[in-house]
Length: 515
Image (cartoon, rainbow, N blue to C red; front, top):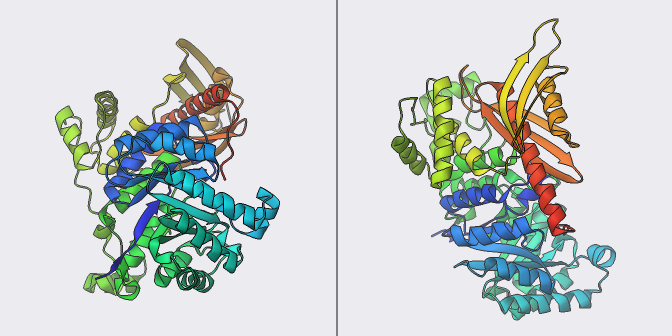
């Protein structure tokens, strides 16, 4: 019987720390519901103290998402832990995850604490969290650069104080598989009360070793892995959930371990997170990349035609890559649309359903057939709604060889209709310059990404943009069979998000810096 490894998903917390990957509350709830369908054990829903938006996300996910334990991160400070409890208190299954550094370099230069002071604070804050919840996790941050004897001392003390999970973070992606495995084995050998807690690991990918280090830790006895969908996260990212899960599933014979993950939901979850964050999955990404099950070599193709196992170590169906079953068109009704969404695992409010159905009907007039990927794009758009200060009413573009690209844009701005005409280096540039002129935005466009949602010349084009102003970065999305229209939608979606974020920031005062 394989040992079951807990999957602690931190896509909504550490994953969101990827530059430009911020999500609004509705998007976080949508992703959390999909993570529940994926059957992760723990969802780290956010850092409740960091902002009102994160607090609301943690609270709503705790109330609305059934199945996984819902967790909030909290620094080793009473006010952080109090705020985490306020966000989590209505959740039926809840965890407070508190942390403080253990490495001398962090304690000396960042926290200005001695080892003894840090140890005392860690114990006190675990006890404080236990006053609220039975399930407390503690992380000695930068553990892989800490003195090993001191790390053992900290782990023993926080377990004694009531931590049921002790997470060993490779915060800066510094360690190697052999070294990390030795650290985990040493903890199991030298910490006398280690059997009273689950050892977790949280690895970053700065040297490209996050998954390898996590797998080495599992071999050494770790019982929980902290990871993210598509490996997104701070700097070079985190250990990739799909790679951890399928690595254990395919090589169960070697690791003698498995997870409770419903792997058939992996592909859908990957696409949703990519759509919501605007972070495109590289084609050669393991498990979920576009090329992961593509075979070009004649030798490989010959082998596959004779026996799939010659060049495929897992079936595409095992991660949900089945042939699209949905073929719907303009004659499909609202009931069939709702039922198809339910089959795909989506549950929308009446208002969201009506908006999604309206978009579906408009798209059905443009496309002969609609597929699952089209529906997922429609649903993710419905869930990412923000108050619309700016909305597109009309768009006309002229462009061509030896012609100056010109765009005429008509927007509804705070209830007032404004039309302007402008030029640019290309049709999209002309549209964006004209929108910027109408909205008087001071933001800077940092990224513009286009991809096709499905195949064929009538495929929806999906555009993601990243916009920055006053230190705030947001991602906007748009999809349409007309790529210029999709581009305008994405830019306006980003500007609406930015307006909402800046307004909320102005009301809430100074924002806490995430650690």
